[in-house]
Image (cartoon, rainbow, N blue to C red):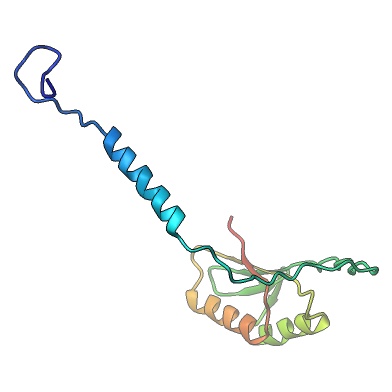
Length: 138
């Protein structure tokens, strides 16, 4: 009996026979796979071609710029106190040395530093077109 319990009680059996469901799903999957149209549109693939000249070796990256902002709002450029107004010109000078191989700007802020000073530093970096900016976490 389909609803019989192995213990002999009169309760309904809670297990469902999933075999017919799996059979139906597999048949539907095969039908969809057979009836699906085959893609006949050619796909252009640009493969790299053999060259006689190897690509140039990448340059050694310059030393990173360590920029520290303390709790008082003072900015230090490589451990040298620097006014916030001079940062953009200093950053632009670093970028103009080699725009393709810029140094990384590593910003380290104190936990008690004012966000406004950090916002000015980031705006200066953006205006100087610095690309590599990272935050140092202690």
